[in-house]
Amino acid sequence: MELNMNPEHIVQFGENKYSYVIERTQRKSVGVIVEPDGTIIVRVPPDMDEKTIIEIVNKKRKWIAEKIKANEKVKPPIPKVQEPVSGEKLRFKNALYRLQVHKSDEKHTLLVRVCRSLHVYVNNQLDNEVKASEIKNVIIEWYKDKALQFLSARVERYSRYLRKEPKGLKIREIKLRWGSCTPDGKLLFNWRIIMAPISAIDYVVIHELCHLEEPDHSASFWNAVESLQPTFRKWKEWLHVNGRQLDLRW
Ligand SMILES: [Zn+2]
Image (cartoon, rainbow, N blue to C red; front, side):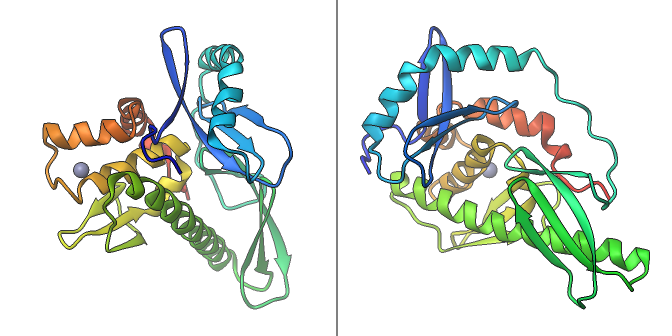
């Protein structure tokens, strides 16, 4: 990893700068995906070097800019109150996953993810209220587990640039905030942040990591945040506007 490079990957077209996230997967070619919220994901073969990736993304910059412009015209739908029944949509890294509830004879409730579906197997003999809370709990546990995996990887990535590592990382049930940094250098994150776009998650990660050095929101704190994520204002604003939607609605 080249540490002198900007940690946030950015492609520029005209005046506009767009950040993107590289995902290494078992594939042979490069695929660029523009999500409806403007998140740009670049899927690449596991061993492709960053320079090649940056060149390929640069060649696609016009296409990316056009795609984002087209997406901006479509407003996201207002979420309605959900129930833990088949067909409900659940947000994960801002993508929508479909809930499928299945009847089971097993005592324990089980969740299996297949592509963008979450299959929950719940004991058929339980009464409806218990069933609903079993489904909810297994989904929250899944979110917490995924949040721990993903945030650990992002913390590791950005702490390499900061040259400062937290003393620990925990996923918690926190209301009203996305994360915090304890005085002894541990990071706590609200599991709900895993519902947000990846760049918004990165903003929360970077924000808390920068508190390891600067406990207050001073000018030098925000400079540090900006040096790791030049587009952070957009994601800070995104969370401000959309943050309340990042929750289960039942
Ligand atoms: Zn803060």
